[in-house]
Length: 91
Length: 435
Ligand SMILES: Cc1cc2nc3c(=O)[nH]c(=O)nc-3n(C[C@H](O)[C@H](O)[C@H](O)COP(=O)(O)OP(=O)(O)OC[C@H]3O[C@@H](n4cnc5c(N)ncnc54)[C@H](O)[C@@H]3O)c2cc1C
Ligand code: SF4
Ligand code: SF4
Image 1 (spheres, helix red, strand yellow):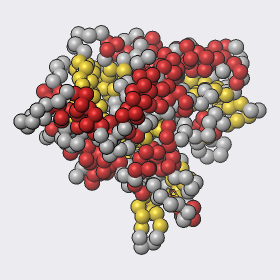
Image 2 (cartoon, each protein chain N blue to C red):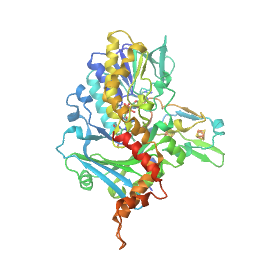
Image 3 (cartoon, rainbow over the protein chains, first blue to last red):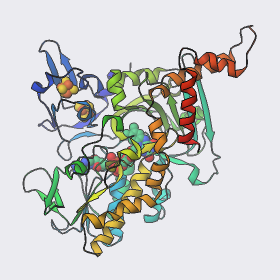
Image 4 (spheres, rainbow over the protein chains, first blue to last red):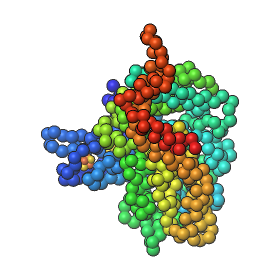
């Protein structure tokens, strides 16, 4: 499996403030929870325990897929502050 | 550095579109700021990728292709259709001595985009990195500048060229469109593998700085899209492109598909002994001319992906070349408008007309139907299966009498696609690609 290795190879400069915020209220009406499988960085996970989608912005690849596929308007989506976030560079 | 507000134009985004626009303006003597949110140009950018040869950057920097940090000049292109127990390929191989227009260049965007922006700086462009544009300043119905995040942190100029890429957020803010739709965009993911130069040459049958691209159809579990393997000097770029609406509908995770793709018989042998070194993801426009919005408003022009100027017809993947060319034309129109001191929506409408005369909108119009055709699900699941089954039947040797291909073809189609549909597709495909 390459999957688990993939995520360890990305370099970030993480800003303390999340650049994407999730409105859990709006997720209540969602029938597909597409974010939990379409996000290429696995930022969204379904928590059985809390009965809601959990979101972690730190490993975001800034692709915009979640923004395009969430149809409940649950995301307040921005690019990270200048100079922060993912950085593609071979080390 | 210039004082704030001392610019003739602001270009947002130092990708191929933005850097070309800024470079063009600087060469015309304009004071131009190029704003990039990444810590350096290219640090946020990825593509498949092969940039088809394009004369545009040579018009600005005559020895562009001699100097630019590209990796390999692609002479070999392989198209593979994956079936259930086999794969079938077609190979195009230009002679190593062939003219440039038959080749394309693989490149690593963090290096290429940075180098290109440095050339623009040398010609007088003010490049500001780590600088994210958060919004537009609008006064008297015209765009007059950009906001950089906090209130009052503004940068003003009479005209803005938005080259901020596929999400096209600034164009939306300017009211040029209401956001691209999931059916018009694709998600690209890619894993980069390191392998020695000699090993890549051997494995792909290449010499010198020659490169190869492999496009693979039928490897996306029915999602509209495909897979690719591109050779760089010492790395292989391996990934998938998937239409967003189709990905959502199918309910699969992109990395799980990638996992299967790299382990598949068509790809695994190419990667043997290599080491995974990077993972990335990015969206790209795939809606064709139908998604291209109005391209300007008072004080603002769009170029590159932000304008939806990127397409594939299944054989050609055109993005960087359209970005550079639209960036250059946007800058030329900007320069003329500045000279005329008229930055009205009507005046800047000339940009759309100019693009219509260039290969950018002409090609996108030529392949209007091809792009629509590429939105049929059956092209990505049923047809690859039929091709696989047919080829397996042709090559099967089991002591039973053989049959002609027409009969085998009908058998391969049975239970997969009705003949009527195939004839319809042949006609539609013919109109899309042949006449
Ligand atoms: C998987 C994949 C495969 C592809 N394959 C090919 C291929 O083989 N051949 C080809 O020609 N094209 C290919 N493309 C398309 C190609 O990458 C794009 O068409 C091209 O990069 C568009 O250039 P651009 O300058 O318009 O946008 P981009 O290259 O996206 O540049 C936009 C720039 O703007 C910056 N930016 C964005 N928002 C802001 C902001 N608010 N403030 C400041 N800066 C900002 C970004 O950081 C970025 O540097 C592919 C794309 C993908 C995703
Ligand atoms: S797709 Fe949108 S609404 Fe649905 S769970 Fe995800 S974030 Fe919430
Ligand atoms: S932008 Fe892309 S990587 Fe980031 S959370 Fe959304 S889908 Fe995941």
